[in-house]
Length: 123
Image (tube, rainbow, N blue to C red):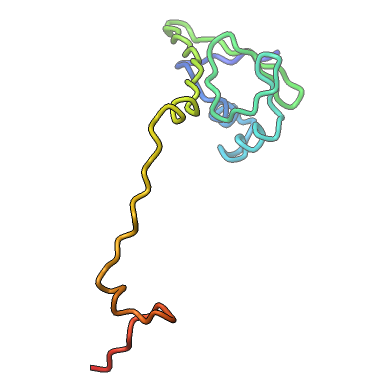
């Protein structure tokens, strides 16, 4: 198991793979993550920009890594994921929109009733 010391946290998973040299580019790192080559804390992780903190463990290409903080670095607070309120119930409670009649413009009056086209002007 390899230990990785961070000077700043959190770091996005795709950036961590790129900085460690496990992926040549950020796009390649995102591809590895989306195709399921990375496990984070024992679970498959497909979130490309997943925030990595000290104490997290991940595996890539049959190698295990543990993330720690360098000395003197203040640990950041982990963001708590709060579920988003269900928006379908909110939209159901709003009043339905009233359909307005279509406006008839002056240009419609000069259009041919059969084809719907304006007359050609040669002037």
